[in-house]
Structures are given as structure tokens and as C-alpha cells.
Picture: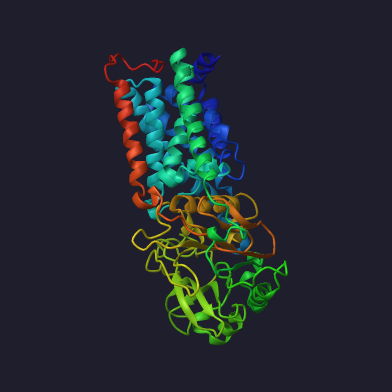
Amino acid sequence: MFTRLYDRTLTLSRQRRIALALLLGALSALALPPWHIVPLVIPAFAGLLWLLDGAVLSPRPRRTAFATAWLFGLGHFLVGVHWIAEPFLVDAARHGWLIPFALAGMAGGLALFPAIAGLATALLARRFALAALSRALAFAAIWVLLEWVRSWLFTGFPWNLTGYVWAGTPEVMQAAAFAGIFGVSLLTVIAGAVPAVLGTGAGARAGLAVLLFTVLLPAAVWVGGAMRLGAAPVYDANNANAMVPGVRLRLVQANIPQRQKWQPQLRAGHLQRHVALSRQAPAIASTPAPTHVIWPETAAPFFLANDPVVRAAAAIAAPRDGVLITGAPRRSGDTGNGQFWNAAHAITGDGQIVASYDKAHLVPFGEYVPLRGVLPIDKLVPGQGDFTPGAGRQTIAIPGLPPVSPLICYEAIFPGAAARSDARPGWLLNLTNDAWFGTFAGPQQHFAISATRAVEEGLPLVRAANTGISAIVDPYGRPVAMLGLGAEGVIDSGLPRALAAPTPYARWGNAIPAGLLVIVGLSVILLQTGRRRPVPSISDSP
């Protein structure tokens, strides 16, 4: 059966090849949050490899391979990041016309990474007559290498990396503590791509390869993760040894629509809404009172550092002898001229700012416009002028709390950049406003991505979001408390302790997945050693 399907794939018409590539790309996106249909990675990646085999046999192999993989990427990103249209609807009169350009431009641009992976795989297959298993392994290594490039090129956008398909499977995600999300991506692409060997008619050898790489390898990772979770403490109020003593957090989620957030006549009401939620009595009378209150990104729509009157009004939310942590814009002077920052402040009850952090990794076109002198558009965030990036990743001290690494909005999506290795914090703090991302896929993907940083670093993650998802996540990536999308309310919880020692990934970073890529590359070379070099054949057995 597989051989017949494979042979038919090799001879597809141009129109059917285009349709199938788009469909397979869309299927691969449905394996990611919030859908979590993980088995779809098998038909998606195996099917793409079959299409690439057909491209090698075409009259124009390079062009066909590149176009096929680009169409796969286009389908993948059109489904996976369709929420990119949401920010342009906040002020549709000004920005709505940009939606087709933003959606097509984002998906089409990101699709270049799969396109390059497909082209490189096809060229290697043709040049070295790679066996079917060698092709699958080479493809997986190239795919993940390009995911890493995507994480930093042009400031980086490592959204929906393949490994996030396991975001709903905490056992497998424990591998991120050792190899990071790129290591989990490598496992996933290998598992999805190796079944392509079933089309080559290689019989028992093909079945053995699928059993090893698609069944046993993920199962072994799952078992290892389950054992790690089984030995992990329970992070709740009944296990004081697992929580930071003397700390009781209150996360405030005011659920303010983005269209209303910056309206001048509503800003004072938004501030009062946060204060009221901060001061309400705990749901259970016996629950300890909060020691620290945390508001989301730009929860206070005022320049608090420049306005002592408004800052005093916000400071009412700080617990007695405690601290309010809030996001707020910051400017360099008392006038509208000068520099602006997207900041987080820690404010005591008497209105003193005792710690601050300025967002360092800004959102292109959201917080600043690249090539502003050339492009005739304005940034999406209200206000005149671009935001200025902060000094970089910091570990800051806030009274009554362990040292913390603040992450504002999408700063939490960058693997290996959540915390300083030379000044390890005790927790991660993610202040965000996911109202920009809509009410479905965008916020859920953002939360899943952010929670993975907790696993990688072995640090708890505290996440305060305007409209959800607010949560406290333990250092194994499991939510301890959560407030979902579109809800107004608070979370009262202790702060989980960090792991006693940094995880391997926290120590060595992306050197570990890089080493795994080298191992896969060497495996491809070993598989090819001793093989005859005939005219390249697509159906060589592994």
C-alpha cells in the first residue's frame, strides 16, 4: 500500500502537487497548540519527503523542490499564525488594510525556511544518492538547524517551533530540560519523517526503522519524562518545602479589551479596576493575604515613573509591607519628546519605585518600525515614536522575593534567552498583554511557548496576562494555578521553588541540540559509507 501511494506521489500533476503541499503544511500546524493533534506530524513530514523525492525526478529539480517545500511552509504558517491579523483589527480604520499584506507576508516569509530545508534535502539526495533513511535524518537535521536560524535572524521569531507539538504532553516536554526545545524539535521531525521509508519497498528494514525512530524513541523519551515527573515534588500550599517561604502572590487579570485600553477617558477606570481586584478579600477566608501583587504588561496606562500622583494611586494596590509589580510605559522626560520604553516597575505602598526593567527585545512593527524612513506605516502600539530597547537580559532584586528575570510579552519565546547563566534568578516573570493575539490560537500558543522556558531553565514561571492566560507554572512546566482566556479575576498562590541546580540546558544552552545535530549528521554519513554510487535513485532502500 505504501509503495503504491509513494509511486503515485512521484507522478502527481503540478496542480495536485501544489494542493497536497499546502494541505500537508496545514496538517503539520494542527499538531501544534491549541489543537495538539500530534500524530499529524507523520503524514505531514513523510508526505513532504515523498513530494521532494518527486521533485528530484522532475525536469527542474531545484526549482520544484524549493517551491514544493515553500508551499508546505505557506500552508503551515497560514494556519499556525493566522492570528497575526488580530492586531490590525484593534484599530481597523488605520491598520485594517494591512491584514492581507501582513498575513501573506508573514506566512510567505516564514515559509522560506522550510523551502530552504526542502531544497537542501533534495540537493543532498541527488548529489549523494542518499538512502531513504539517510534522507529522512538529513531532512530532520536541516529543518531544525533552520528553526534555530529563524530564532535569531532579523531579530528572530521562534514561534511554533516543531517541538511545541508536545506542549500538551508534559512527559515528553521534560526533554527540554536536557536538550531545549530544539532538541525536542529534532526528536519530533525525525519521528515524523522516518515513516517516509515505507514507500521505498524496503520491507522489514523500513519497518524496523519506523519502529525505532517513530515508536520506540518517542516512547523512551516519554518514559524518561514520566519518571522525572514522578520524582518531582507537588507544588501546592500543602507542601511548604516546595514553595518559597513567606511569599504569597496575587496575579491580577482585568480582562480589558484592547480597543478600550488606551482610550483617554477610560484609562483612570482601568487603573481603578486593577486596584479593586488587587484589594479584594481572598476567596477563602483562611488563605494568607498576598505579599506581592502582579499586574500585566502596560496594566497601568500611564507614565508611572514620571507621574507621582498616578503612581500613588497605583501603589494603593501594594500589600502592607509588600510590593506591586506592574507593566507601564516609561519615558525619558516629562514631555512627549524623547525616548520611550516598555517597562516593568516594582512599587512599594508609599509609591517608591524600588526596581525597574525595560523590555530589551522589541516587536518589529508592533513597538518600532524597521526602516522607518522607508516604510510608509506606523507601529501598532499607540503613541508617537518608536520604543527604545532596554539594556538586555537582567536579573533584578525585588524586596521580599528571590531574584527574578523579567520577560515582557514575547521576550519569553526565545529559547536560551530567558535568564542569565552568570546571575541565575529564582524565578521567571512574564508580563504580557495577549489581547493583541485574539481570543483563540495566539494566546494559547504564547502560553505554551512561555511555559516551556520553565522546563528548560528549571525555574518557576509567573505569568500575568491582561486577558489570559495568567498562570503560575512550576519548574517542570506544569500549571500550579491558572486563569483562562477572557476571564476577569485574580490568582492567589505561593511561589514554587526553583530546582536546586540548573538544568543541563540552562548550563550549556544550545550547545546540546547542536551536538545532537552533529550526531545525526554523522549517522547519515555512516549510513552512506560503503554504499555504491549509482545514478541517483529515489527509491533506494535504507
